[in-house]
Amino acid sequence: MSNSPQSDSWRWIPGGVTAAADFVAGSIYVGIKKSNKDRKDLALIFSKRPAVGAAAFTTNKVKAAPVRVSMAHLRSVETRAILANSGNANACTGVVGIEHAKTMARAAADSLGIKERQVMVCSTGRIGVLMPIERIERAVLPLAESLSPKGGRKAAKAIMTSDTFPKECAVEFELDGRTVRVGGIAKGAGMIDPNMATMLSFLTTDATIDKRLLQNALSIAVEQSYNRITVDGDMSTNDTVILLANGASGHPGLVADSKGMALFQAALNEVTRRLAFMIVEDGEGVSKFVEVRVHGAATHQDARNAAEAIANSTLVKCAWGGNDPNWGRILDAVGYSSARLREEMVDIYYDGVVAVKNGVPSDTPPAKLKNAVSKKRICVTVDLHLGEATYTVYTTDLTTEYVVLNQSE
Image (cartoon, one colour):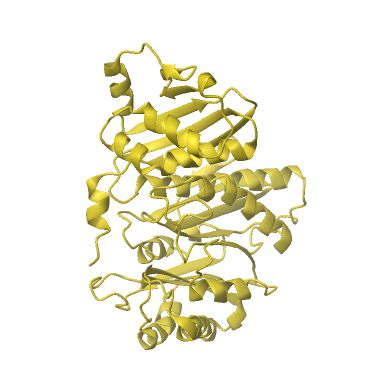
């Protein structure tokens, strides 16, 4: 959860995306979305020294213009900056949208004295609306001039849309006598579904690592964090995670399969996991954080299919929202998930309290089951008893407040 404990090998520190050495950030008000009066809506993150980048993007076939531009820019040897706006997704905007995304990258590059392809651009907000690109262009230079090593929280606030709080965290650990830091920010509350959840996350580290290893490390981290969360089963056109590494800590370069690399991976995993949990906890109109565990599946894919079917079921999530331990909906979701199962072998638990044993109702008193599902944090476990594979998804309930929040403006 977001209050995950300290580790013997790393420790939590303040600073978020600017906790790592030689990273600066900031934000500025542009007025991209007219209803967001006086709320800063453009963020910039910059490495003061050369850096390499890695990223993961939405798997949606409909990709926003900034996603397409950033995917191309990621092929550059160096990546040093991220420019991101809230209030407008710049998605489904055609050739004009692509030009606007390129213009954002070019404006940031000119203001920072770097190459356009060294800038990643991200957007979040309403789909199908053209960007007020002239206002953004005018704002980038004063934004670049205001960057600060204490600006991480400002950047976290500027990328918020329906979020209710800024999401940031950072850790540090010792490596070869040097202090290495990993930090990040994220946004996301609605349209959250794996591969990837509809969200933005920007991560930084002062570790010394080559681009190939960095990409591999990020892919591992994303799989165990952002790809394990779902709020409403909807996937966005703009999902992006970017990780920049600038080597400012000064330790010898990380090597694959080394102790140092394992330590870095663990730290990165913890940062991404904590940010992912914050996204789930801030889900639109939700009242519960739910951990769905599937055990005993015949294959890894079966375990994943079953867990995601449960976590994305509207019927199941509404039952949780009403404090109803309706295990029949859970068993139904597993049944249509395509996971192999034998109904007479399935067990279902709410926080360790057995609801179903061998495919039929347990003798647990209904009041005890209702009490288990009424908590703010619950764990639902399904054991298929067909193998050794397991999979966990982090999700929420759904409430009437979610409907209200997602009505058209």
